[in-house]
Amino acid sequence: TVSFSQLEQMARRTSVLRACCLVAVAFGAWDVSRAVVPAGLNTRHGTVTDVGSKLVGQKLSANPSLRPVMVLRQAAKKSKGEPINHGDTVYIKTMTGRYVGEIDGTTKLEWVKARGTKKDKEHALKIEKMGDKESPIENGDTVMFVLPNGAHMDVLGSAVRARYYDPRGQWQRITIVKQDGGQIFAGDQIFLRGHQGEYLDANPMERAPDGEVKARWRDEGEWQVMYIEK
Image 1 (tube, rainbow, N blue to C red):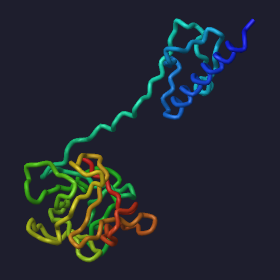
Image 2 (cartoon, rainbow, N blue to C red):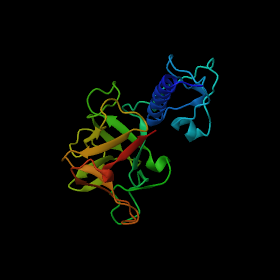
Image 3 (tube, rainbow, N blue to C red):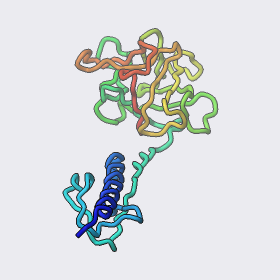
């Protein structure tokens, strides 16, 4: 026979156990095989089925000698790619999923396109850093891009072209922006801002098959998202 006070005590213990399980489930961290119950609790009165164990179709052990452990797991940080330095060969992928590189295919042979589907010599760009060329490239640095034809990418108005190799030019200066700040690594999401303040974007292929790269808006929006790769 179980007295009322014993039942009340059992109910309190079960409530605390359930609360612990709910916390674990909320953080996406429940692991029945390694669950932990506070030291003052046990399950000697029977097998306890809680919210977390229902999710995985298992039950906690009724053996008080098996002390389950609850661990909150933190998501592993994404590993960084190689640092981007002056003189590196890089590939710029636009929000359309295409790589910047071609400058032919239309009557405007000097206009930069983003139509590439793979990283090859036609889409290999050389990045040049203005200023201290020995230190890695970081958010806010001014850079230039040399296209496969040997000319720097330049911006004038909304037009993005590759006409001259001019390491001292103003039109060729592009600011590389990383919203998280810090050093630029291969695989980072970036924005490229022309010397006039507008950000580079690319026409979606379904709207403009030539995939022209443009500099139209002062906006770090979805259209302006780019990725730098090696």
